[in-house]
Image (cartoon, each protein chain N blue to C red):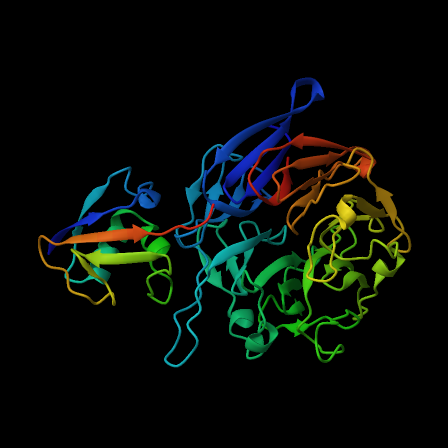
Length: 88
Length: 370
């Protein structure tokens, strides 16, 4: 499965500045593993060691929020990584 | 690049280097602007190597490594992370890498990291790959030792390695206490006897104390100093009971603070920076009059060092990693950074203070590199 992953600015140091990258995999977990193979270190900034999405990060497949990393990803989908900051 | 102070801040890392001809200080950076930098530590065994504990507000925690004295940095391939939780176990995740300590001189490439929630991690390849120290992280007592936490989570800090024996380790947890291992981290025992814990129902409890900073003297490793939530202490091993040397501080100042810094060669000399621990714990300079205190007799007496520091209305807070020396005896340079973004230098063992940088972000750590 080939999808598009939108990379937020805090993670673009991993993708050489690319805003979107191609991803491979039939689930969100597989897409993240694919990203990790190519952009080492990126997965742990997004997902913790218990495979939980980090508290201030949200993942979407197209417009639906990812509740579990097993959520399917279909060819042509866009996976969004969203980061939230607060305060100064 | 010569001698440098590495300043870890809430918004990145900076360096301060003596200016040409020894006049003034030259600020450079930021490195990793916007990243939360808790600690930057040089490897005394390989001075070109530095490690930096980092995270951001939204991304997971990590460690950066430099092998060229901080010119360039590369992320660790495997940052500190707890093992995957088994079914029914609490699933712990590292929220921040808070503390870094180089390993024993004979174990090149070995490092220890302390995290929040309280976890101990070890790297044997210069900080590239980190493994949990199961003897501590999975110790059956660990849930009780690190049960309370602080608003920023439980902090594991002050990891110390006995220079005579790589298997002899100390660490501290806020809130939890001081712990010791004599078998390379396979097993641990509390080491808090003598320390007050006046916030606890049982003041003689074996753990649950709040060490803010513990330091082992590198030349006299049987001597440890501790700045605790409840006073300043000294421990001379093999004795197992801390002695409250802060009792000799002036009553109106008290003996509460975050950092304690040791003289590079003289085990009787140490510096502390008292803060206000009354009522709701403002943690600022006492009465708005900042001062460093130095003992030169192992804590029997203390001398106030405030020449050059503001005389009034200066409400400084100095965190536990934000004070250091330059390691140069006999005229030791002492440095501290404030949460208001100022760095102060105390020449000649702190006898005269000068502000050498201001307008920095909130300072978390000040460390010296050669």
